[in-house]
Length: 403
Figure (cartoon, rainbow, N blue to C red):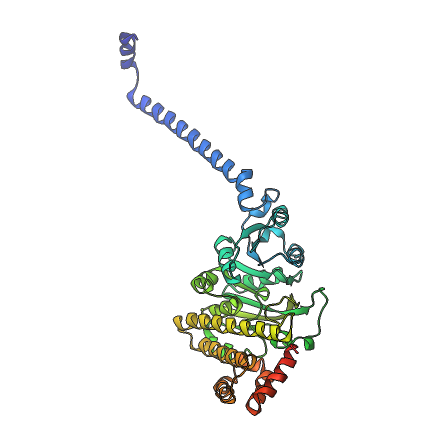
């Protein structure tokens, strides 16, 4: 290198000008680096591998922020699963507004392929309760609102749009719950009189009941003959409320719907009980809450086990309510526990008369609450157990269709 030549030019260069040129050059280099990094990030965000991880690659437009996460819950392969999923796909809400997750308790390559082909996300969770499946879906969901769907139920085509309208029009809404149409195993409607218990009751309200977050005591007292904590497929709830309940959900065997209702009841958010029948609730032989098939003894044994499970789940819900200091909700869950104890006694054999006297007397303090009034007929018929436990049990078995 000719150092003399270089040094001969130095006096002719303006130091200020050289500095400006150097700064300009460095700025150009930095700009090129930023552009390169931006392009790299964009390619990674929109690459097919990324789309497949979150949703099927054939539906990249559905990766936009959804408003509702629909969670289908299936413990075992049943013929109703695809029908349930198709009811979600038939919604009149644009597909970009909701994501679809399916939590499965089994492995089935054909079901997995089907879910991926429609842009759904399968989550495998064998040997877990429905409540734990809800937890797994909540942790992987992306939308602020969760709508659950049991694999044997169905959504009406307007359900998701109604949910979105309700939450967008009331930013303080915590839980939305609608009524159901009762259907049989073939999908045809069943008369409510054929279904024992509150699930078959008519709800004659003409407009939604809004329980304001600031007036929970008075609002919860108005809930009668409406069964607000019944059926997972009939509720939609804010994800942050579900997240509060995760430690309790992990301990449940069933009745997550009851816990989620009380989570909303203990919050400062409002509850909307909507009279529209936006869910099709299927009644069939495999329903855990019904007697099912087999001999009369087997069917009653199944009902006894279910009643014990319900009572245990209600006790977990009560722990949540007590921990969150909600007296109005505590009275309601205590009423439901008292009713569950009476139901268990009615299903078990050899329960003495004095036990029924004590249980019925304990229920009288809650007679104004919805858990008692929703099944007032059952409450009154339980008086037969005081007259004769054997007579009461015979009438009860006949009412349940066990005999």
